[in-house]
Length: 506
Image (cartoon, rainbow, N blue to C red):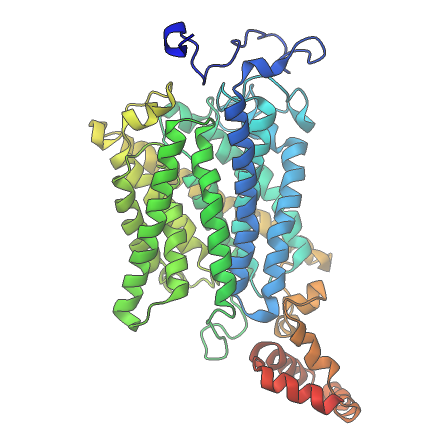
């Protein structure tokens, strides 16, 4: 029978969910809970979850390439560790504090503590997918937000305090902001704020947290002098990270439709277009000054375009993505100069790209949100933005952005201040490495491993006389030896030099 004639469309579940009394959705031993959901929706959301997970090592590679080589591995380590720590926090109580069915205006309850009763009932995000699937998908958002923020520890932050910070920040900062933005009972959601995939909870929150972390850590050794080389040490890592992020962002934005539908398709279209335009724009702005077609500039512009389109990706038409890409690329490019005005050593420009990019995206969403785009999923109804003459939407977007950014910045300062205060009594909680440790590099001091084999080779190929001479000299002048070690890690790039050292050792 023709499905249009019969009324049974392919996207319609076999049965409507009616078990409103059982929080798990029903007894799977006596009833097939799968009949309430479309297999295509579930397949797409599982795929989107994997795509968002792919973004996290992308963040690590991007940050690693931007940093100096002696701290490159630590940034990769922090990115994957953020996944582990936040995934446990999400299971423990993060999901409940964010997406509890009994949530308040600002934060959820603990009725889903330890994923209790999280199974087959329709999620608070969408009735098209079950709680359990929505949980694992949103857990990836929580993890990547923390991974973005902790890049601020680059080259001078210690690992253990950062791990503690990951768990506490997720609980105290991310969960409330995500709750009031995406939970139907949150104050921004009820007020009418539009944030499709994380302009405020992900980007503004992580960018402002990174700025606060930079302030609390202080500037890197040599900051503001010729001693500190700002050039990225590995542009290939930056390109690899950008590719991972670009691909994963399809799951990030298109997956936020929470169903396999036309709204997800439109989100994918505007995501890719904004990324392309953002990369071109940043490149052109840099070329105007440097007369060079910067690879790092293109990659930064792609990320800026992706960040800007995130809050509006499920609300704006395709042509608007060009505006998002241009504005994101230009604003984030010029925002990289803000760190000098703010006197903060934001080593990886996280505030400029994510906080400013997210803010630009939120504001542009107020201008270009369209009711017919949101309704492409078949059920979402919004008054739209300025395209629909809904002028007050700009006020809602401003309130959401400023509330999330200020809460994240102040809260991060408080969390880190408490940890550093504890460090006065227990050194393991001290946020910052010592000057000697910073000179040696965080990879050496905190991890004991390196991103590149030849860093270790420069030690192994020393002759006995060199070692004896260095040992005697190091007792009298430890700061000079630390500087020599730093040179070994930061300045030795030539394969000819390595071959020569190996020949001498033999």
